Image 1 (cartoon, one colour):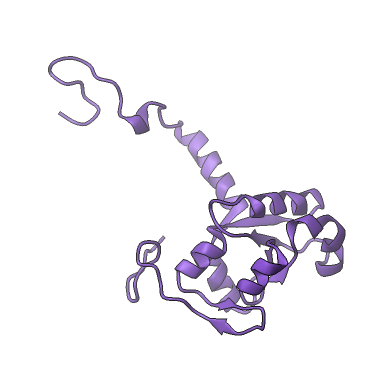
Image 2: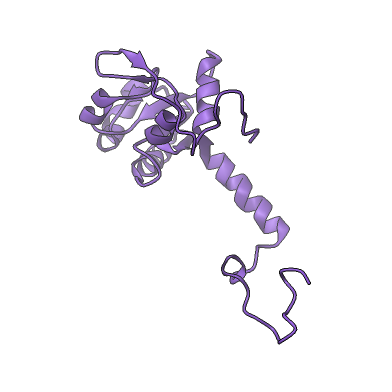
Length: 166
């Protein structure tokens, strides 16, 4: 008997993940394609930055104190509250923007992406934020521009020599 079959004693309730059935494939395609159109992960952003021609500007939308504590090398600092007034002086019209903030528990990058979109910029949000960037052992610059890497968190990133092949 497979996991979707009824037990011999009678039917049973679907497991928690299936209490709401999966979307039909066409709806799933539209949903996941839309997510990829709006989001980028830290590994892909890092690889693009390392290429030297990423095709986007990475924007740190956190506070000045957070920026000084640590930010992604090459990112532009533009706190979310200043986007409407300063985006035009820092970014040419049509520049593709990728926003980031602290991490998955913060919607600052989402709010910033909305602000950029409202100004007409093509935009994506870097999922995971600086938290997952750091946890993957990627370079972080401090307020003086010194760049360092922290050890990889083995629960969130592959260890050396092991690729996740996402």
